[in-house]
Length: 88
Image (cartoon, rainbow, N blue to C red; front, side, top):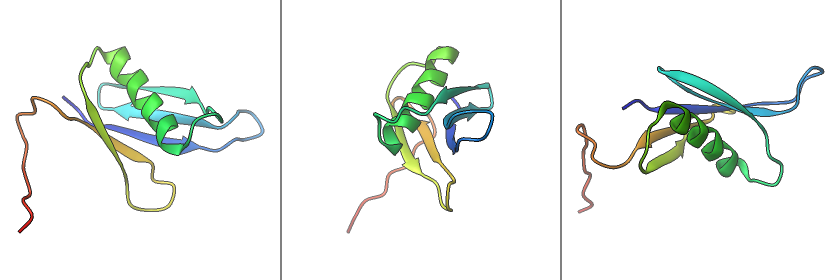
């Protein structure tokens, strides 16, 4: 399984705002949906790419550091390489 990165691209003279989901296996670009919030737009793009690639199951997303860096999405179930952090 691969991680999915999503990034917002603002409107230009030639196109509307959009969000792009990218993984090593491919990418998709969706138009920005003003009826959705930031996280839901990024989730929609990640979901569209996962569906395109035939990846099923739960995904967890989180913000990346830096202004306008977007989000990262990782597969959340049956992962072989996992770790746990316990609070004291």
